[in-house]
Length: 231
Length: 314
Image: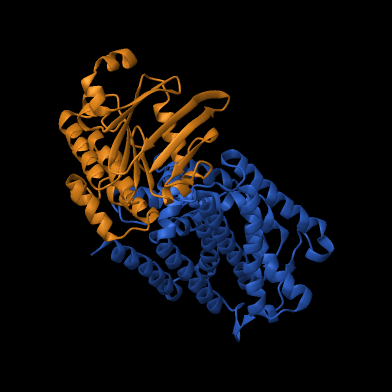
C-alpha cells in the first residue's frame, strides 16, 4: 500500500503542493482529478522522487520512502509513465524495452509478457521510438514501465491526444494492471474514462486535497464534477 | 545473421585488416598506423564518456598524461620493471579519474566541462612546477630497458606495430562487448535522458562515476602505451590540445559508435599529414575539411554510415 501523507513540495521558491494526501491500495485504480495547475502532475513527480518534499511523508508498505532518490523508488517497484510519454526517442522499440528490463533486472519472460500485452510493439521492435504514432508511444512508455514489474504504477494522462481505439486499449490495459494486483494511480483529464475504470477519486485544487470519494459515490453524484471541475 | 554476429564480424574484420596492412603498406605508413592505433585507444576511452554516457570532458589529457607519467616516472626515477611500470601507469589513471570523477560529477553540463578543463590545466602546471623531476615541456626519453617487455623490444618497428594492434583489438572488442552489456545499455540510457533513466531505476550518479573511471583508465593505458612504444614522455601530452584532440577524433569518426574513434584518428592524422605536404597552411585545409564534414555528416563518419543503412552498428 502506498500512502501519501500531507506532502508539500515546490519548484524552486514557487510552492506547488500545500498538503496532499492519498492512499493507493493494491488491485485498485485511484484517480487524481483537478483543474489545470491543481498539482496533479506535481503529486506524481513527488511520489516518484523527481521533486523533493519540504514536508510530509510517503510510505510504501509502511516504509518511509519520501526522502529516497527516484532510482531507489523505482527499485522499490514504483513505475512512472509521465505525461508526454518521455521515451528514449533515438532508440528502437526493442532498446527502449531493454532499458526497462535492465533497470528491473527482468528477463525474457517479462519481455514476452509486455509484448503479449502490446502486440503492436512486437511488430515494430526495430522501429525508432520517435517514429511511432502517439498511441504506440504510449504503449511503449507503459510497456517500458511494466518491465520493472511494478507494484505501484503512476500513469500521467495516458490518453492525452490519442484516438478512441487507442484510448480503449489503454483503458483495457489499465484494468488488466489492476486485476494483476497493481496499485494504479491515474491522472486523467477525460472524466468519462475515469468514471468507467476508477475505484477511488481524489480531487485536488491549488495543491491541496478537496475531497476523496469512491468512484461509485461520484457516479451517483455527478454534480461534484461540475462543482470541482466545472464540467 | 544476427546484429550481434554482424557486429562481431565487423570488429574482427577490422583487426584482421590492420594485421594484413602490416604486410602490404610501406614502412612509413606502418609507423603511422602504430601511432594511430595507440591514439585510437585514447579516443575509444574518451568515447566511453562522451559518446556513450553523454559527458563532455575537456580534461582528458590529464588521464592520458597520468598513464604516461605513471609509467615513465616509475622507470625514470626508480628503474621499475617495465610490466610493473605499465600497471602503475594504468593505476595512476584509475586513481586520478576516481578523484576527478568524485569532484567533477558534483557539477553538470558546462560546469562539468570547465571543471575537467581546470583539473587538466592543474595537472599540466604540476608537471611544469616539478620540472627538475619531470623535465617539464622538454620531457625525457624512456630508456631501452624500459621499452623491453617480456623480452620483446618494443622500439622495434614490427614489434611495436603488433603490440599496438593487440592493444587496439582489446580496446575495440572490449568496447563492443561493453556497449551491448547491461552496463553499456545503462550508460546509453543516461546519455539519452538522465531523468528518464532515474525514473526507470538507474542510479545515474553511480553510472556516470563508473564511466569517468573506465574512460580515464583506458585513456591512461593509452598514455602508458604511447610512452613505451614511442619512447618519450613529455608535458606536451598534458596540454589542452591533447584534451581537444580526442573530442575532435570522436566527433569526426562518430560519437557513440565503437569504430568511430579509430576512423576519426585515421582521418585527421592523414588529413594533416597529406595537406602539410602541399602547404604550410595545412591547419587551414584541415579546418575547412572538418567544417565540411561537420556540416554534411554531423553525426560523424560512422554515425552517418549507421544513419544511412547499417542500423546495427554499435
